Amino acid sequence: MKKIFGNTGGLKANQIHRLENLYRRRIPPAYILTSELALEMSRLSREISRQIGLMINRTGNIIFVIVGDHQGIVIPDTSDYRVDPGRLRGLRCIHTHLSNESLTKDDLTDLALLRLDIIASIRVTPDGLPAEIHMGHIAPKQGSGEIYQTQILKPNELDIGCLELIRALETEFSRSFVLKDAAAGKERALLVSVSTDFRQKAEESLEELKELTESCGIEVASTILQHRKKIDPRFLMGRGKLSELSILAVFERITMVIFDTELNPAQIRSITDQVDLKIIDRTQLILDIFAQRAQSREGKLQVELAQMKYLLPRLVTKNTAMSRLTGGIGGRGPGETKLEINRRRVRDRIHILEKALDQVLKQRKQQKSKRNKQSLPVISIVGYTNAGKSTLLNTLTKSNVLVENRLFATLDPSSRRMRFPREMEVIITDTVGFIRNLPKELMVAFRATLEELESADLLLHVIDLSNPRFEDQIQSVDKILEELNLERIPILCVLNKQDLVPEEMVEKYCRQYKAIPISATNASTLTPMIEKMESIIHDISFPYS
Image 1 (cartoon, helix red, strand yellow):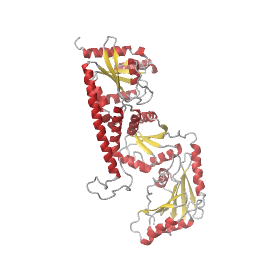
Image 2 (cartoon, rainbow, N blue to C red):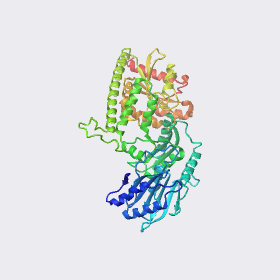
Image 3 (cartoon, helix red, strand yellow):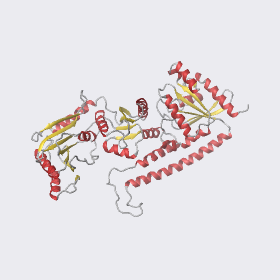
Image 4 (spheres, one colour):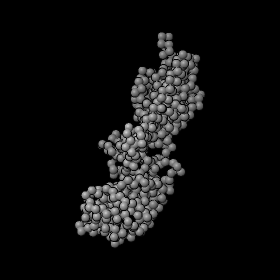
């Protein structure tokens, strides 16, 4: 006999046998369930004083028999029954209610989160008879804003054309997707921000997440911003909000959810247990962007190391199927679980990558020592991602470094020689762009690149004045420079894209930040900046002249 799921403790042998016999029942396609089955479930449920639930597939076969307590049931893992974006799972849940109640909020939440075809409850009388069946399903979006449709059925009115109803629902969903269908193979993401900050700050952060998502080549289907006094430690948002998120995913053909924060391993596990979608956080999104952009061997090593360090604490298993095969002694033999093997492999890979990056660091030190022998001053361009650093390097040195209007277009540092009007030669270096809350894994992995900044004689801080969040971006860059202990190095601030903002705004912020206005694409605007750079480098190189 198949397994009975849930709370079977204390049941008599004949009661368990009757529960097992439910697996033999088959429901005709037109029926939500048969009257005989409803009667048998009601009698048995009242007899054991526990709710009984059935999970039924579209062929009418019962795949799970579940026993709960007086208040509810716990639906087993249905992850083997995968669903395509915009479609339902192909399972319906029928269970008993021993109290005089209709479908509960938890019932409707399970309907949404699990993308069930239908959920129904049988109201059981004190005599153990089915009084009525309350049925609900997700409805295509109505003008009223209702997302569920419910109805009450009598025990002798269960021929509702069940299979046709489910197919009609999915047809309606398909019609609503005509204008929202993602391109073949392209992800559609729902962006979620759960914040305790001021709404404006949360909106700005969500807007930056949108830019990051599009920079990664993912289509943004919709956004959700929830303001909470306190973050839910398990789900971030409430379970009810997760239910709405799951329904939105059905309507918008969403394939993944991106959270505008870093999720801890427990939160990832809890959310993925509830929502049958890819779940990633802001850190993982940035790591994915870096993985796409890295071109040099060093960059690829750095990104892979950051990904491995991010992955290690998040290697979790959702079931016990891969428990110990044998009771091996010593923990390295055949008794080791699949999870432990994966963790060990990741740790081994981290060790290999760290050794490779240490070798890169030695090579950088050798290059630095050769450069020091030539006594060439170094100017490092720093700034928020997409502020125009690479564009400025190209204009100053007539180079062809990749330039794109997207976040983290270039990762690998580029160095070029430049000659000032006074015949002084310097090295100009373009570094990786900074971002708010730069993941600590990246800070560690890119230490060889970031340590290049330590040898700089001058930091050229490029600021995108046309970005409405530029003041927050300045604070983020200053914070990272402070964490890298680079405050001792002179910094020259330049306000880029002056041609895109009003003149009075340029003057105001030049005074505030003691900055020089430029347009990185227009070489004629760079003269004051070049003169200032030359003056600072001259004073550093010849302090007493």
